[in-house]
Length: 149
Image 1: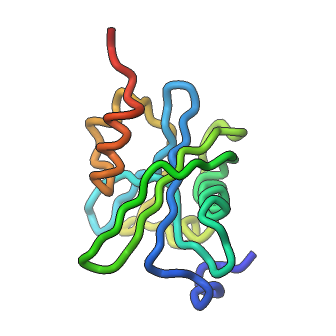
Image 2: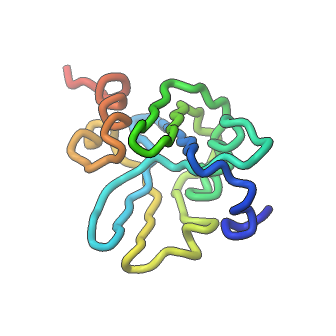
């Protein structure tokens, strides 16, 4: 498999495909701290030429978190008209992997000013987190949060 720099010419830069993986009452997120700013994202990345979005999501989840997922279903997409970028979000089934651990290019780039930490987070705590982009957090809040009786 090519590394990030090697496949740069084969990436479709204006597309990001991300996976939402639920395991029991927890959701898979990547905690980021970039230049002092803390936020969370869903694992994902750029599509390569000839690759389907569903394949991107499965590959990226595993590369970024060591978690194996399957059966991605596109649930929504978002177009940022300011910079002509497309985000695609898929719900995926958890297959294996208990404790997420950083792999791939993120492990290589991981440092104090560009920090990555994959983790499981309780669904009922998601609403308090700074999850980016906001529309993805909104979708989770409306569709996946466990309601207290």
